[in-house]
Structures are given as C-alpha cells and as structure tokens.
Image (cartoon, rainbow, N blue to C red):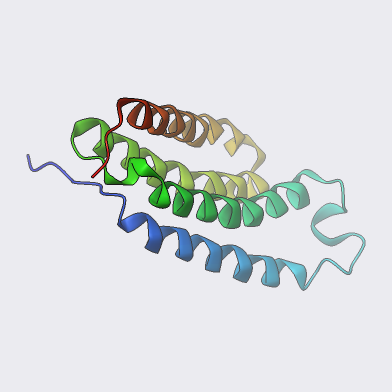
Length: 135
C-alpha cells in the first residue's frame, strides 16, 4: 500500500482555502443575522455552532499557514508526515463538525475527532521544533 506524503507546503493552499470558506460562509449566514429569531435566536445551539464553524474556518486556516511558516515546516520523515496530516484532518474536521452539530445536535459527539487531531498536531509540531528537525 503506497504511503501518502504530507508536506508542509500544501498547508498554504489549505489555509487560504479555509479562510475563503470562512469568509464566504460568514457572509452567507450573516444575511440572516439581522432577524432576532434567526437560527433559533442569538443564544441558540444552532446559531452558536454556525458562528463557531465559520470562525473555525478562518482561525484554523491562519493557524495552518503559521505552521507552514514555522521551522517545523522543513521537517521530513514519519513524525513530520503524521504531524502535517493531522493538521489537515483537524483543520477540515473542526468546522465540518461545527456545521454538522448545528444541523443535528447528536453529531456533537464527533468533536472528539478534530480535538484529538488538532491537539496531537500541536504536540507533534512542538516535538519537531524541540528535535530541531528543519530543512
């Protein structure tokens, strides 16, 4: 079975893609924000998770671009491959789970996936930095 190579270079495209999706989704959902009862009202689960989803796109997009700028971005090998793959997984999964949870509340149990992916990616990034693995 061929192994997928996840380098830091693709994080730029992912990051900008997430920022664009975040801004576009914010503009789209913002069309209804003037209505007090939009998505169940300001404090409703649906509205809060929708807002969180669009902000997660922008924030995680910027975060993965920051990882691409870090000294860890030059690292290679299994640990780096896992690290950059987990950043991709978590950055896409977090806003996806936010939007899915806004749609169907029981799907909130899926939050473990992006939380574990992003937490692990952050720890692995630190490990790469501590090991001094860079190009």
